[in-house]
Amino acid sequence: MSLVWFSFIFAIVILLIVGRKSIWLGLMISAVTLGVLNLSLAEVVLIIIGTIGDPTIFLLALAVGIMPIIGGALSESGLIRELIASLNIRSKTFLFIAPAFMGMLTMPGGALLSAPVIANVGTGASKADYAAINVWFRHILVLIYPLAGLLATTKMAGLDLYTEVLYLFPAFLLLTLLGYFFLLKPIHDTSHLGGQHNSKNFLLPILAVMIAPTVHLVGKLCFPQVIEEIPLMIGVFLSLSLTFYFGRLPVKALNPITLKMRPWRFFLLVLGMFIFLNIFKATEASAAIAAIAFNKTFLLVGIGLFLGFVTGRVQVPVSILLPIYYARFGIETMSPPVFAVMYFAVFIGYLVSPIHPCVAVTLEYFKTNLKEYYRKVALPALLAILITTTFSLIIFG
View 1 (cartoon, rainbow, N blue to C red):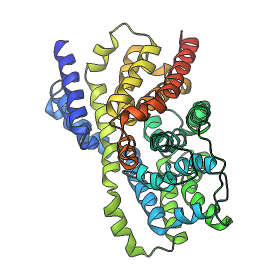
View 2 (view 1 turned 180 degrees about the vertical axis):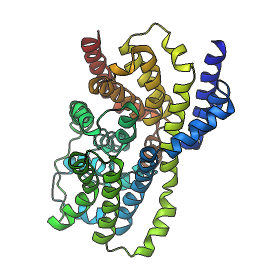
View 3 (view 1 turned 60 degrees about the horizontal axis):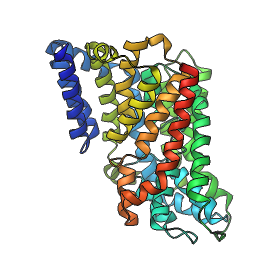
View 4 (view 1 turned 45 degrees about the horizontal axis):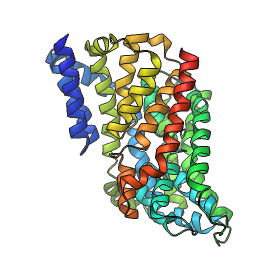
């Protein structure tokens, strides 16, 4: 049993160290390390081949890999700039809307897309205010956007993606309210944006972003006999095509946008998540960890928050937590509310993590620091966790 614990801790240390530079590579190396220390090399190879060869996992990874290209095309085409120029609203409302919408565009360093947009809007905000607003509101829609972190993690948990969106909607409202009262309301600003309203410029980028989950959901409902990753791929390709069409981008622009966005990192991230999960489940590590006498709230909220904070990611902590939960409480007990509590706790840790890429690049852009950032977000984040813990204790005991 000591070897199991050593192999698990060693694998997690590798994941954290390598993951600072490359999260997908960290997942791959840590998964193989955990495997060879507990299983035969042949078993590890078979698990890897079986995971990559699973058409549902492969298509899921491919779809996730295409999404950053959509974000890059929206930015490169000028559709985002045109959307912003068509707005005539209060500056404080814009500070909420702009980062929230741009947060749905999956792309590396994506916070740098919204930071310049909100940097000089309105009056009465400090650099730390802008930094906190950019990070906080950039992620509120990400929490429930079906084709973000929930896409792969709900599949890992064996739950319906859109059912989970509904269960997480109260958490989205909670983050919105906390962000408003603690980040937006204290800013004394009554100015307005003077954009010229243009329905076409406003609706086209929204349509391009939302067509993918719409096609995915309709395909799931209308063709239940078809694996759901097929309508997902259709929706993602349609979204990409519409982005190029609406943005008047030539086909030859696909190559430079692809090279800039490096979508293979997202593709390999999803494969790495499932390889780690499947190898982890094949070892005795989950059973050894589950033997610790902790309750659901401690595991889902406490450990979930911690892993989200130390990894600066959402998918990786869920990959670690799921097999531990299964070993301790049983697969059959994983339900939408259980997953929602776990996912939200991880999400809060990720939101305030100092190694979260969006936090790092936002602080650098606004020339502020972690101390000032935490002065703005610590209290709303703490309240979110306290509310989640209370809810968890009530429903789980």
